Figure 1 (spheres, each protein chain N blue to C red):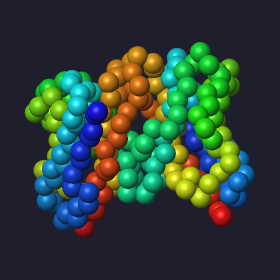
Figure 2: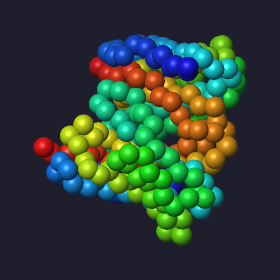
Figure 3: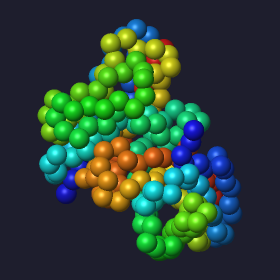
Figure 4: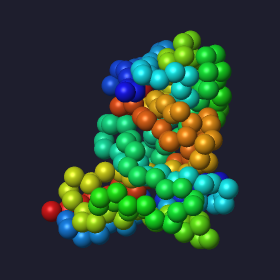
Length: 114
Length: 111
């Protein structure tokens, strides 16, 4: 059973508009949430994270929102750029935890069209 | 600064042949090390993780094994590859708190 779900395998957005990627998790014990970005034939790179004590974290064009009651997080990219085209993975875990505690979703492929 | 090296970048191997993928980390001590596989439509699947030399935990039963002969070296192996072993293999390390840093990956094609 999937503990982390990214229900949209793909998303297409026009350049300059907002991209919203969604992620749902099942276990309320998770308290650390991350987004990774992956280009083809490369390893994922860390993008942004949020801990459960916050409901929003912003870094430039990227904002992560956390709704703990709904067990839902989302990544907003504003404005979207063609270079943002990649697969985005959400990951959940426990802050300060150890070995193998990050669980990844299946990813959402974002295409930003010029 | 910490860096992670993973090689080779691409590999084409016949069915039944052995496999050895290597991953090394620099600039940190006693990292947690991980092997992931990304297969089409499957996302990132954790295969093995290690919290120290000689300590390996397996997440998924499979045709693969892992070893950690040194603190900053993690090896993924197979004695006989299957077609289903094809995929994109990723090594990662963490200090346990701030998430993972991934290597550049190995594209394995079993033919």
